[in-house]
Length: 341
Ligand code: EPU
Image (cartoon, rainbow, N blue to C red):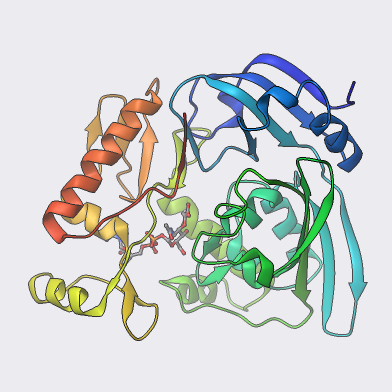
């Protein structure tokens, strides 16, 4: 039998930030690569090889009902400095390490690159699947390599290029979905900072604190996030519910003729990204309640569980919002959150 902890009909309420009170048929936690290998090759896993999910902190998931499959959770929390030069440090971090603890670790050692990604809920393995991003930074910019195990227990190392990173996207969500389980992520951190302060009011918030340091950038990011995004301990949510849509510049200009205040971020010569939160607010959904679900009053991109909401209720709200945005602007918005059936 594998050494991993295996539990049946396991409650997931403390493993998903939406606070869905659902159960997993099987729930397994592993501490190291050998544990994981034995589990994958065991009779426990065999019936679920096409019916399993890997979760981190469950901060980007919406369970629609009890999960009839097997849930895997990494407890690999080790961190090791692999190499150090005059300018850089390579740090290998276990997939179960809490993301923000890693940011704190790097900031406190005056290692730079992760500070803009402060206070994002979740764990290191999921950060590399989801390509988490905020305030002008994306985790893919720091990733050197990703180590992962296939379902036969063989290890493979992916370079950053092989991970095919895009906006909230990677090969682990696409072509290789369900085929690899991340064990370690290695980050390249800088000893000399290159500050990115041009997003929104970040610069002003940092300057409030005086000197620009890793600590003050981290604090400013935390302050901005806490002012807009609800604490999942208080109000269940999964951060941004939708991705920001990318549209043709021509379509953007047509909309701007009618709504001169529409914000945008350039993507390339042909396209721009438009904030879904703005579109949703214009459609009148900000702060609106739908049964036990609601659109957050301070950030329309976030859907919240007011208490006792079901996954279906939240999905229903999301579908109504998306339909309204489509009708009003002719823009399709798609969930960033993964629905688990
Ligand atoms: N806006 C509105 N109304 C709203 C929300 C936003 O008009 O209710 C406008 C804002 O005024 C601003 C623009 O939309 O002009 C952008 O808003 P914000 O800076 O809050 O960022 P966002 O585009 O809504 C994205 C990420 C967040 C990340 C922030 C900061 C996505 C899907 N979301 O949100 O990521 O923290 O930028 O970088 O890309 C997450 O992924 O869970 C997440 C929180």
